[in-house]
Each structure stands twice: as C-alpha cells, then as structure tokens.
Length: 255
Image 1 (cartoon, one colour):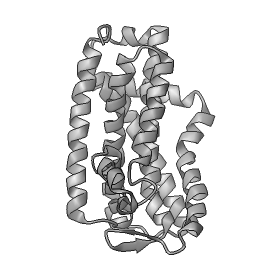
Image 2 (cartoon, one colour; image 1 turned 90 degrees about the vertical axis):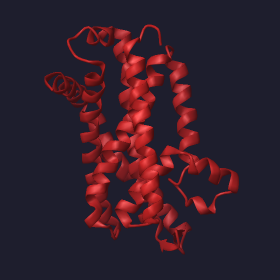
Image 3 (cartoon, rainbow, N blue to C red; image 1 turned 90 degrees about the horizontal axis):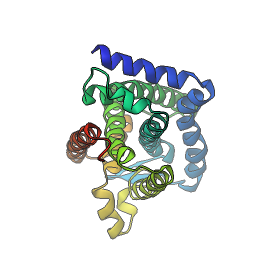
C-alpha cells in the first residue's frame, strides 16, 4: 500500500505543478456541456428519445460529457509514459521494490479521484445552471462508473503507450481511436437514430457501454436490464485491459 500511495503522491505533484492545467481538467467538461448542450438543445427542440423516454438534449448529453472526461483523463495519464520514458524515470520506477500492478494502480487511483471531483463539479453546476432533473438516488452509481470507466480506458491505452515507441505514432493512434470510438457511440446521439451499420459498431463499443451506464445513473434513461449487461461487458473490458497492461509493463523493453 505504501508504494501505491507513493505513486499517487507523484501523480498529485505532477498535476499541481500547473494550476492552469488542473483548472482545465476540472472545468472543461462543464464548458463542453454548456456550449454543446445549449447549442443542440435548441436544435433538438422536441428532445431526444432513449428506450421510449423523451428528454432534453442537455440531460441526454450530460452522460456523454462525463464519459468524454474519463476518456480524456485516461489519455493524459497514459501519455505520461512517453514523458517518463524520455527522461528515464519510467525505467527507474521499474527497479523500485513494487509490483507492476501497484505501479499501475497507484497512477489510476489518483486520476480516478480526479475524475470524481470533475464529475461532481459538472453534475452540480449542470443541475444549478441548466436545471437538469437528475436521479440523485443513483449518484453512487455515477461515482462507480467514473472510477471504473477512467481505469478501463487508462489500462487499455497504457498497453499501446508502452508498445508504441514514437510520439507521433501514438498521437495518430489516439486521434483515430478517439474519433472512431466517440462518433461510433451513444455519446452525442441515441443509438436508435443511427444507420444500422453504425448501430452495430456502437453496440460493441466500450464507450457506448460506459456512456449508457452513466446516462442511466444520471437521469434514469434506458432499460435497466440492457444497462446491466453493458456494465458487465465494460467490467470484462476493464479486466482484460488491466491484464494486458500488466503483461506489457513486465517486459517494457520487448514491447
């Protein structure tokens, strides 16, 4: 546990070296919600329908913003491997008396806490400024979803961050993956409104699973049985991603 706390403390020091960057992490999701949500709220004057329930676009988009924020934190954390590898600290860390799992868990625990604070700010101010009717009785599920969602994407991206040696190649991979995952999901629009081929992509997209769980947890949208299956699928994605990340970091020179 001591080594996990040490890694968490290092992540904290990295984040607090730039208060501007920390402010960006905390409030940018709210900015997305205010700018895009308000803009599309007028475009979708009749609201959007999810599993037969109709709601305003602001309420619908809230889960998408939270999911996007988790993915963004995971990207920033995974990208840190490039900085650590360039200055040699990454390989020095691997010589310390801690397991590879402890190293990864320490990194993601701090950033999951960051995701929780970020979500609390977004949800609270979203409710106050936009008058969103939220399911406060399910707020615990939101916290659970943010922590596991951030962890799942971090472990997934870590495998590629360690295996890909060139910074430009990793940035290209991130941009392509983010574009495909984001627009092939339920983040911006209901899956039911998509063409059939894109619906098929969305149904097997972990970003859709994560977003749908958060949408159910924030506003109660969606069928509970379907959301439960999507949550279970994301847990499998998290477990496989963690196993691959640990396996990759055990032999970083061969990856």
